[in-house]
Amino acid sequence: MVGSWWTAAAIKSVPWRNGAKVAAILEEGLWLTIGGRDCITWSRPDHWWIRHMNEFSVKLSMDRSAQRAARYALRVLGMVLEFHKSGFQRLRIFPSLSPSGTCWRCAITPASNILRSHGAMIKDRATLAVEYTTGDGHEYFGWRDTRLAKAPELASRFTESFPSIVRAARGSDWNYAGWYVEVLGRAELGELPVAMADWPEFPDHPCFLPTTKGIESTLPMPPGGEAEDQE
Image (cartoon, rainbow, N blue to C red; front, side, top):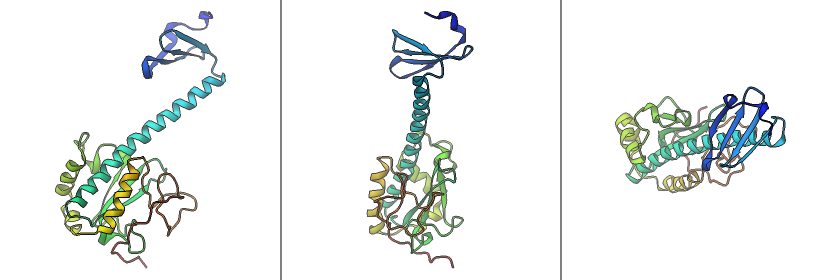
């Protein structure tokens, strides 16, 4: 062994799945990995497997963050479905990505505030609209006590907080409601709709609605709303 290269005080351990651990030897610039209980190896940071471990750890962290964001988004989308099931099918979504591309956003608004030329594009964010971003986590629409709230609970809370939006969304729109079922099905697989994003060559009038998987989407465009385009 080359135990003289490190001391126990120089090791910071991080719990890993299935009882395994990854530990960084801080003082000497060395790395130690403990695979399970008995397998112990170490190496200098420039070894290829250390670089691979670092890349994997970053990717895993990003994957977990994306999974959490997808869960938050799915809960908001599920809330809208609750309204559709209750006779408020004119309630619509305007989905988008933040400028950094790290957060998915969703404005909730009635069909009267959605463009006729683009069924997922809002006309006025300041009128009869409220927006959620996955950057807020489980604090949906600014609510701080909804960590464990399910879609029906969110719908009830939304009705209390934004009654004017809900009233304006009363009525049937079976074409949109049917399209929305497909949106929800894709969202359950981690694919979220995107009507606006700072992507190169993002289409202004797409034939299919882009998603978080990219602009080459097969998600049909939703039926147009009721608002005239701004001149």
